[in-house]
Structure formats: structure tokens, C-alpha cells
Image 1 (tube, rainbow, N blue to C red):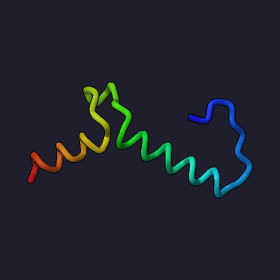
Image 2 (cartoon, rainbow, N blue to C red):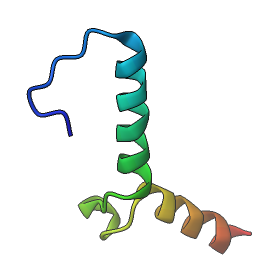
Image 3 (tube, rainbow, N blue to C red):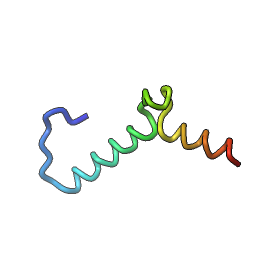
Length: 50
């Protein structure tokens, strides 16, 4: 997402980090989770155990 970009401002860094965490957990399919996102897997596990 930042390929080669250097950020020396902590506010900008924190904003970009939040964007990456959101992408990683809610939008990026994970091979180890059979193509689900971590959020989808968590939701599935909590719904089946309820």
C-alpha cells in the first residue's frame, strides 16, 4: 500500500496504519482462512457457537 513511501509524520503514519489494519481484517481474503477475511471467519465462528 505504501511501496517505497517514507512517512516521517506520526499522524500520517497512524492514519495509514489504520487504513492497512482495516484492509487486512475486513477486505483482504486470506488463504489460510479459505479465502475469508479475519472478520468473516470471526463472525462465522461466533454465529455457529451461539
